[in-house]
Length: 273
Image (cartoon, rainbow, N blue to C red; front, side, top):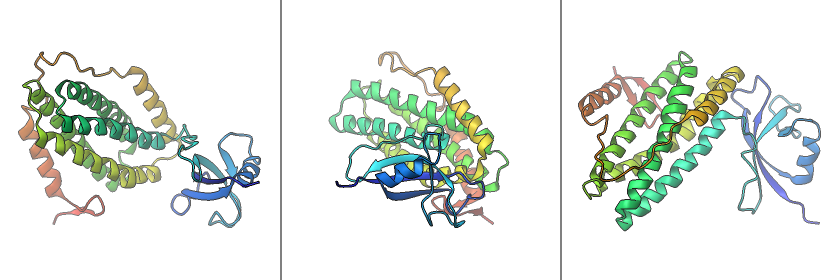
């Protein structure tokens, strides 16, 4: 019988594993994984294989996702209690909506863009403003100087996306597809998501303790329950961007951040003196 090979992403549960093996990936036979999982009654936990942990003995590992080698679908997002992983997964939903917008721009579909850009704005408001800024940011306050810098940059990115989307939708009301604006949204939003996934969320993982993570998960659930969905509405009814009149103020804030810090693709953050 051919043994199924699994690629398992995990999170080490030992409190000292903050740097070296907190998160990782194992390639393991399914039978061995089931044997290791039998060590715990709780679903999603398994005993680390020999030599998998830097401490030299087995630790409880928490499953983040499982993928059978060669399979197209992932048996994962098993760790539904991991709020940072949930935020990463929500980025995929934003990217899907962004792909729809990009396709409709190429086809010059005005009415379809009116609906899809409202859906994109709704996803950004729910995920970026309500969950990240409203729920995650307060938990990161005073954690580290790096966290403060990241939050400033993320905040300015969010303002920029919403402002651009409003401007684009105002153009749609004039039967005009503003390619320069929507192309900026597409490129910048994709880069923003990549940097959040690779750098910002890694910092978040290292900064939040278990109590913080529980608070974040609870807050995110409240957002999902109370969020008021943004609907496209009538394209003939004029909308006004709350950011358009404050564009100069917004640009001044961004300039201040850039002058205060030298930022190299989020990799280097230091005073500009």
